[in-house]
Image 1 (tube, rainbow, N blue to C red):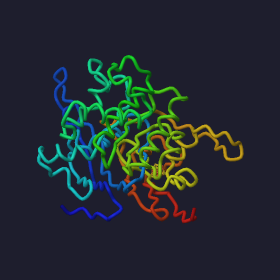
Image 2: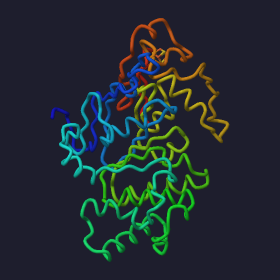
Image 3: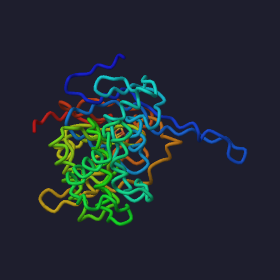
Image 4: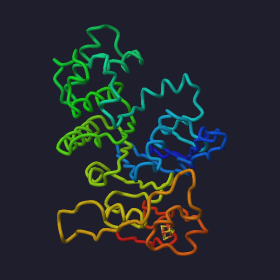
Length: 335
Ligand code: SF4
């Protein structure tokens, strides 16, 4: 493999793209356009960090998360996890890799089999990877995991329907950490939960990360949740990463007009720091028909003729902070 990996990098992504050509079949005799869901994504996730991936729904966040775990195959690009190029692994070797990478799903109702007890759900990855040999060992390990996610082991023979949404998400988290992974993709893990429960789950996810040292790709559309958990933030629009950088830089000095608009919608209790709301015109264009040049030009409040013609590269505006905008200015204010 030819991806440059430093000791700090757990996940390295280079020029990854995904085109869904299944949509290119015939519907009522007419050919359908293919959909470019992810286009040229390049970034790293460091060991023990949380990289948040944000953007409106349909911008390609979930597809990118699934590409990183090879739940779907990339159309092009390279993905290395702990130095291993996963796109070139045989299916047997990828099965072994799955012990090191896990996923927490958005829907705690739909992602747990209703016909399996909690003990069976949590023990499933332990059994797949041969980490428990006897029934007693399995139940002991399930009990430990339930305690770690704040659930009483006395409930292990119950079924998902007997738990609240927050408790079900704890079960999903216990299942994800059972095999001691290095990397977890959490796809909107709290957006289906009540606001009062969201903070508890985010705190649990942070505590587990501190004690176990794994990395998260935390996919979300709610920037107020991301503020609590992210170390760095990547912003996606129509399949492309348009800005990426340390959390404090993204929140205090957003360079891209799209990031500025997303942040202006975040409720800010302090009137001193409240930003005036930027209302974007129109809807997100269809990913089957991405605008030319800068794909944000149809909604950007400061678009110029060059924006329609030329795609802006993702360039550094400060150390570790990159934006894809012809008019993003260097902003080297240290934090
Ligand atoms: Fe707006 Fe142009 Fe920058 Fe795109 S390149 S974000 S259209 S100013």
